[in-house]
Length: 155
View: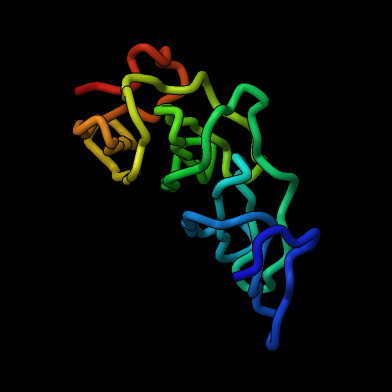
């Protein structure tokens, strides 16, 4: 296992074979230039990649207040294009614009332990997320950024 490379390693046929840091989670979505991949892990960073070429896309997505590892990722299509959610062992769920890498809204709170899984789906009122945690709960949240964080994670 490769653990802290300075640059992604591109193997035969242009495929990414190793990335910065220790990768724990992956997700994929359709971007404007084809399939995109996001990775997250112990370094508290989400990184975006062109899934076809293996080239990094944009800078690392980090939050200075982030206290935990990236433990789950999910993607969905929003009114402003592809969106990404990341979860952490600090109990938060964060939303991002998958194209620009910019954070969207405040972190969503409600879990009292690690968030271990995320899933997104299209509901009758728009995109929704569900998060599972080591605290024994599964919470649903609306993905719309205009809703306050306190409204985000519902039992």
